[in-house]
Image 1: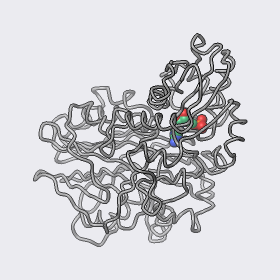
Image 2 (image 1 turned 90 degrees about the horizontal axis):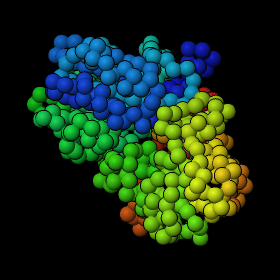
Image 3 (image 1 turned 90 degrees about the vertical axis):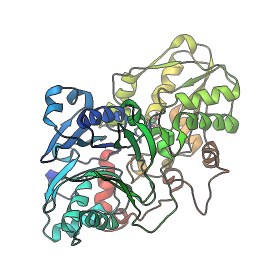
Image 4 (image 1 turned 180 degrees about the horizontal axis):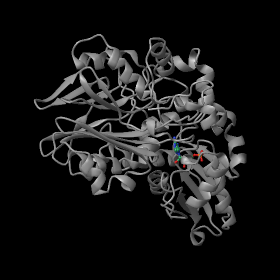
Length: 488
Ligand code: AMP
């Protein structure tokens, strides 16, 4: 779900772009508590806002708050207000801008067919274009979120049955979406035709659970049933679960960045352990660009699994040469570049004993703007390292994202404006190397990247966008780019 910036209107000045987490339960007496726990396990996907909607057979209840799940949904008073045996919720990640409560999900509307709540992980790439059409048609938008477009499309569909109206809406949207939706009779899960963002199905005490990642099933003791397939819609009712595949079949192309950075290492995504995959990326990186050194140091926490794989492969000791303070958020949450740099300092400190006088290989999962790398290299040098070499367990990020992983505009991506040597100089390390794109695919168990039918969504590294980018390429280009620039 992304925020939409609309020209010259302060109401729309907040420019949110998010990676999010979604969760839903159907038919369990503790539906709201389970949802709060599931969202807590998905907190890494969004730390800015959280919301839960429940349904008790008669009424929908909703609580939407700014902040962390535990700040609000650990209180009995809040949980008690959310009655019912069905519930769904959302955690949202935003990088900047005023955070407006009206953008916090799940979004809810009373349709002629009854209540409808929806929450969304991913970004739509034609939301501004659709929104123009809807507003021309008389729609009154309440939020600046692209997810609201889905709500309006469902409301305006001429189909009779609810599920046909929902499908009608999905046929009109482009981009990435993993949705959880709820009506007075159904819990619905839907994944876009390429399956860009993840969504899994679990079971607990006979009830069905939907979640962005398996770690959210683990926390409530639910069993993993299966992934929602790309282009699949599952409809959960008192009669059980029904699977629909209303879209033309396309080969799946899940986002490779889920494996590199976003998903939690203890999750299983696409049948692969995220942790082991990250270790394999580190091992492949070592094979491609191993260097003689005294110590392998991860940039915590994101670089840890890759650094373990790297160290195992080269046979050099792995040490925690940087210690992370866990009580500050991810670097990207800070809105301005100045604060972001401070954020890096707040977050990390050098464990000098393992660094002094050593030739250090620093391993991180990715470089986006380069902010983290510059600060970390400087810290390591100040701690008396003899040499500092950086190894990055993914290829250079040269292209912006429009599907919800929140990489900035091209000009702010270090690798889009610098070649490797210029990056090395900017970062101030003695050598710098990245995992190759084929090495990345090999770490994922493939021979390499299939250029004619790429197995993953990997536009960040290749510029190969797997869906139309209607807003960016059409008349909304300027709006879209200014939105990205403000958040860059
Ligand atoms: P930067 O400091 O801008 O180069 O960002 C790189 C750091 O941010 C790495 O340590 C990554 O673990 C982390 N990172 C990578 N991609 C993202 C993202 N889309 N959102 C938040 N953090 C990210």
